[in-house]
Length: 194
Image (cartoon, rainbow, N blue to C red; front, top):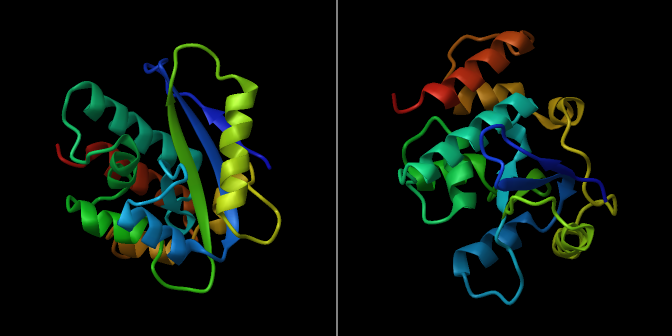
């Protein structure tokens, strides 16, 4: 399994475990498990629909916004992981944000970015990260590849520009103009609610 540990400047107490899973077959079951909230396993993660994420800058923008909201007592969601999904979205309605930017309810397979916020000002211990990685590998059924690094290249490979344009309500932006699409998406996240 491959994963990143992300850090957001200005928020040294947070470390974010991040991994990209392609072709997840049991995404609908995981969605039901989370909704039931009666589970014996640790599923306290932000499960993002990778169709909507085109670059790391977009992900960092949502994380920054989430941590600012948490620090200022302005979180709209009950958990930091739900807040991340909500902050990825241009929508104010959390349930709508979860349905479009969280785990998809349809389709045979799904590409998902899995994030786990770990509160620690110290470097994360390798065994703690390995425990998270192993738990995810056991939870998520994909093409026996496990997770991948969350990189711009991997995100661009799984992103669906048409879906991004639709979900961010960007009008007539060309799917081919990736730079403009990235700027508009990042700006939308950063400026939402102002």
